[in-house]
Image 1 (tube, helix red, strand yellow):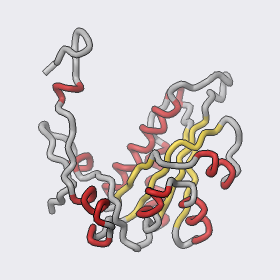
Image 2 (image 1 turned 120 degrees about the horizontal axis):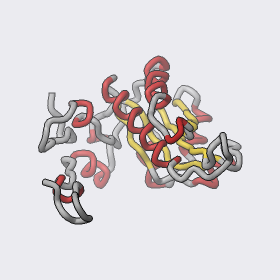
Image 3 (image 1 turned 180 degrees about the vertical axis):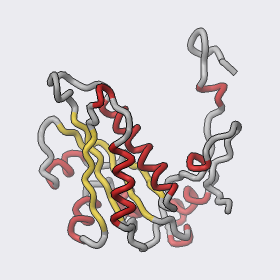
Image 4 (image 1 turned 60 degrees about the vertical axis):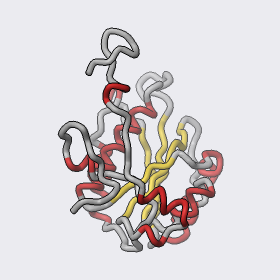
Length: 199
Protein backbone atom coordinates (compact mmCIF):
# COMPACT_ATOMS: atom_id res chain seq x y z
CA UNK A 1 0.00 0.00 0.00
CA UNK A 2 1.34 3.40 -0.97
CA UNK A 3 1.35 6.48 1.25
CA UNK A 4 1.88 10.14 0.29
CA UNK A 5 4.96 10.28 2.53
CA UNK A 6 6.67 7.25 1.02
CA UNK A 7 9.84 8.26 -0.79
CA UNK A 8 10.26 7.92 -4.53
CA UNK A 9 13.96 7.16 -5.04
CA UNK A 10 15.82 7.65 -8.30
CA UNK A 11 17.73 4.40 -7.73
CA UNK A 12 16.63 1.15 -6.06
CA UNK A 13 16.86 1.11 -2.25
CA UNK A 14 15.30 -1.06 0.46
CA UNK A 15 11.62 -0.36 1.12
CA UNK A 16 12.36 0.31 4.81
CA UNK A 17 14.17 3.45 3.66
CA UNK A 18 11.39 4.71 1.41
CA UNK A 19 8.66 3.89 3.94
CA UNK A 20 10.39 5.64 6.83
CA UNK A 21 8.97 9.08 7.48
CA UNK A 22 8.43 11.41 10.43
CA UNK A 23 4.76 11.65 11.43
CA UNK A 24 3.09 14.36 13.45
CA UNK A 25 -0.19 12.46 13.92
CA UNK A 26 -0.07 9.48 16.26
CA UNK A 27 -2.60 6.83 17.16
CA UNK A 28 -3.27 6.30 20.87
CA UNK A 29 -2.40 2.61 20.43
CA UNK A 30 0.32 1.65 22.88
CA UNK A 31 3.59 0.16 21.63
CA UNK A 32 4.39 -3.26 23.06
CA UNK A 33 7.42 -3.39 25.33
CA UNK A 34 8.83 -6.22 23.20
CA UNK A 35 8.80 -3.94 20.15
CA UNK A 36 10.47 -1.11 22.05
CA UNK A 37 13.18 -3.43 23.33
CA UNK A 38 13.89 -4.50 19.76
CA UNK A 39 14.14 -0.87 18.64
CA UNK A 40 16.79 -0.14 21.24
CA UNK A 41 18.51 -3.44 20.57
CA UNK A 42 18.88 -2.16 17.01
CA UNK A 43 20.40 1.03 18.42
CA UNK A 44 22.76 -1.00 20.59
CA UNK A 45 24.25 -2.66 17.51
CA UNK A 46 24.94 0.58 15.63
CA UNK A 47 28.57 1.28 14.72
CA UNK A 48 30.53 3.85 16.71
CA UNK A 49 34.05 5.24 16.86
CA UNK A 50 36.27 2.88 18.90
CA UNK A 51 33.05 1.00 19.72
CA UNK A 52 32.43 3.70 22.34
CA UNK A 53 28.63 3.51 22.01
CA UNK A 54 28.26 7.04 23.45
CA UNK A 55 24.45 7.06 23.39
CA UNK A 56 22.10 6.96 26.37
CA UNK A 57 18.31 6.98 25.94
CA UNK A 58 15.68 8.06 28.46
CA UNK A 59 12.26 6.61 27.59
CA UNK A 60 8.78 7.58 28.75
CA UNK A 61 5.53 5.86 27.81
CA UNK A 62 1.96 7.08 28.13
CA UNK A 63 1.07 4.30 30.54
CA UNK A 64 3.31 6.20 32.98
CA UNK A 65 1.66 9.64 32.62
CA UNK A 66 3.94 11.51 35.02
CA UNK A 67 7.09 10.35 33.24
CA UNK A 68 5.56 11.08 29.83
CA UNK A 69 4.62 14.59 30.94
CA UNK A 70 8.08 15.17 32.39
CA UNK A 71 9.78 14.29 29.13
CA UNK A 72 7.19 16.20 27.08
CA UNK A 73 8.01 19.32 29.11
CA UNK A 74 11.62 19.06 27.91
CA UNK A 75 10.54 19.69 24.32
CA UNK A 76 10.09 23.14 22.82
CA UNK A 77 6.45 24.24 22.76
CA UNK A 78 5.97 23.73 19.02
CA UNK A 79 6.97 20.09 19.41
CA UNK A 80 4.88 19.61 22.55
CA UNK A 81 1.77 20.58 20.59
CA UNK A 82 1.80 17.36 18.54
CA UNK A 83 4.23 15.07 20.40
CA UNK A 84 1.88 14.94 23.41
CA UNK A 85 -0.17 12.38 21.48
CA UNK A 86 2.74 10.00 20.84
CA UNK A 87 2.59 6.94 23.11
CA UNK A 88 6.38 6.91 23.49
CA UNK A 89 8.83 9.78 23.96
CA UNK A 90 12.59 9.39 24.11
CA UNK A 91 15.37 11.78 25.10
CA UNK A 92 18.64 10.91 23.36
CA UNK A 93 21.89 11.86 25.09
CA UNK A 94 25.58 11.54 24.31
CA UNK A 95 28.63 11.02 26.47
CA UNK A 96 31.10 13.66 25.33
CA UNK A 97 34.35 11.87 26.20
CA UNK A 98 35.93 8.51 25.38
CA UNK A 99 35.71 6.22 28.40
CA UNK A 100 39.18 4.74 27.91
CA UNK A 101 41.15 7.97 27.61
CA UNK A 102 38.89 10.66 28.99
CA UNK A 103 39.55 12.73 25.86
CA UNK A 104 36.77 14.54 23.97
CA UNK A 105 34.78 12.43 21.54
CA UNK A 106 34.22 14.72 18.54
CA UNK A 107 32.01 12.20 16.73
CA UNK A 108 29.63 11.27 19.56
CA UNK A 109 26.73 13.07 17.86
CA UNK A 110 27.50 11.32 14.57
CA UNK A 111 27.40 7.96 16.35
CA UNK A 112 24.13 8.81 18.08
CA UNK A 113 22.75 9.54 14.62
CA UNK A 114 23.72 6.06 13.47
CA UNK A 115 21.96 4.52 16.47
CA UNK A 116 18.89 6.68 15.86
CA UNK A 117 18.87 5.60 12.22
CA UNK A 118 18.82 1.97 13.33
CA UNK A 119 15.87 2.74 15.59
CA UNK A 120 13.99 4.32 12.69
CA UNK A 121 14.50 1.38 10.34
CA UNK A 122 13.66 -1.24 12.97
CA UNK A 123 10.54 0.74 13.84
CA UNK A 124 9.50 0.91 10.19
CA UNK A 125 9.91 -2.85 9.89
CA UNK A 126 7.37 -3.22 12.72
CA UNK A 127 4.77 -0.81 11.35
CA UNK A 128 5.88 1.96 13.70
CA UNK A 129 7.13 5.43 12.87
CA UNK A 130 9.65 7.67 14.60
CA UNK A 131 9.90 11.46 14.51
CA UNK A 132 13.33 12.85 15.42
CA UNK A 133 13.37 16.24 17.13
CA UNK A 134 16.18 18.73 17.59
CA UNK A 135 13.78 21.04 19.44
CA UNK A 136 14.48 20.27 23.09
CA UNK A 137 15.34 22.39 26.13
CA UNK A 138 18.63 20.81 27.28
CA UNK A 139 18.92 22.63 30.62
CA UNK A 140 15.38 21.65 31.55
CA UNK A 141 16.08 18.04 30.60
CA UNK A 142 19.29 18.00 32.62
CA UNK A 143 17.47 19.08 35.77
CA UNK A 144 14.36 16.95 35.22
CA UNK A 145 16.31 13.73 34.70
CA UNK A 146 19.35 14.47 36.88
CA UNK A 147 21.68 14.12 33.88
CA UNK A 148 25.31 14.26 35.03
CA UNK A 149 28.12 16.42 33.70
CA UNK A 150 29.79 14.85 30.69
CA UNK A 151 26.45 13.69 29.30
CA UNK A 152 24.67 16.02 26.89
CA UNK A 153 20.91 15.95 26.22
CA UNK A 154 21.00 16.15 22.44
CA UNK A 155 17.77 15.26 20.67
CA UNK A 156 14.38 13.64 21.27
CA UNK A 157 12.13 11.31 19.36
CA UNK A 158 8.51 10.24 19.37
CA UNK A 159 7.54 6.66 18.57
CA UNK A 160 4.17 5.17 17.73
CA UNK A 161 1.66 4.23 15.06
CA UNK A 162 0.81 6.91 12.52
CA UNK A 163 -2.76 8.26 12.62
CA UNK A 164 -5.11 10.22 10.37
CA UNK A 165 -3.64 13.69 9.62
CA UNK A 166 -7.15 15.14 9.98
CA UNK A 167 -6.53 15.17 13.73
CA UNK A 168 -3.82 17.82 13.33
CA UNK A 169 -3.95 21.64 13.24
CA UNK A 170 -3.96 23.09 9.72
CA UNK A 171 -0.28 24.02 9.39
CA UNK A 172 1.00 20.75 10.80
CA UNK A 173 -1.51 18.81 8.70
CA UNK A 174 -0.02 20.40 5.58
CA UNK A 175 3.44 19.18 6.59
CA UNK A 176 2.01 15.73 7.30
CA UNK A 177 0.49 15.37 3.84
CA UNK A 178 3.14 17.04 1.67
CA UNK A 179 5.27 14.51 -0.25
CA UNK A 180 8.88 14.23 0.86
CA UNK A 181 11.64 15.48 -1.42
CA UNK A 182 15.40 15.01 -1.46
CA UNK A 183 18.32 16.77 -3.13
CA UNK A 184 19.54 15.00 -6.28
CA UNK A 185 22.69 12.88 -6.07
CA UNK A 186 24.37 15.33 -8.43
CA UNK A 187 24.18 17.94 -5.67
CA UNK A 188 25.59 15.82 -2.84
CA UNK A 189 27.97 13.36 -4.52
CA UNK A 190 31.25 14.93 -5.68
CA UNK A 191 34.57 13.61 -6.96
CA UNK A 192 38.04 15.06 -7.56
CA UNK A 193 37.19 18.34 -5.85
CA UNK A 194 34.30 19.85 -3.97
CA UNK A 195 31.48 20.76 -6.31
CA UNK A 196 32.57 18.48 -9.14
CA UNK A 197 29.75 16.05 -9.78
CA UNK A 198 30.43 12.34 -9.85
CA UNK A 199 27.18 11.59 -11.72
